[in-house]
Length: 65
Image (cartoon, rainbow, N blue to C red; front, side, top):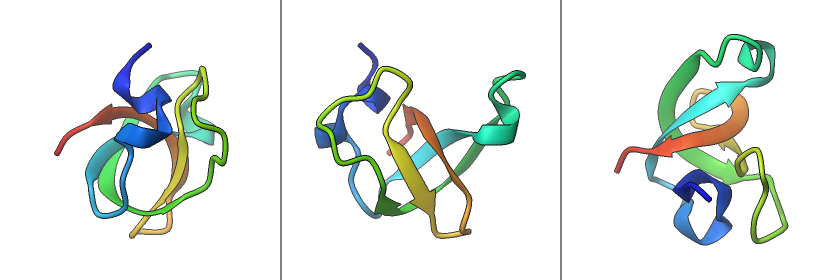
């Protein structure tokens, strides 16, 4: 399991790389700061869903810092 699949690793204010819904086929990643955590369950196989400060919504691929 990668770190983006566990809710405990994803915190508001952290810089992350997410995959947007429209980019799931290509795997293109978008970087930003977490504003809201949208997944309620403690883990998710495709990554925890978050909203970035930019308003983009996607699943966490990597936690950058």
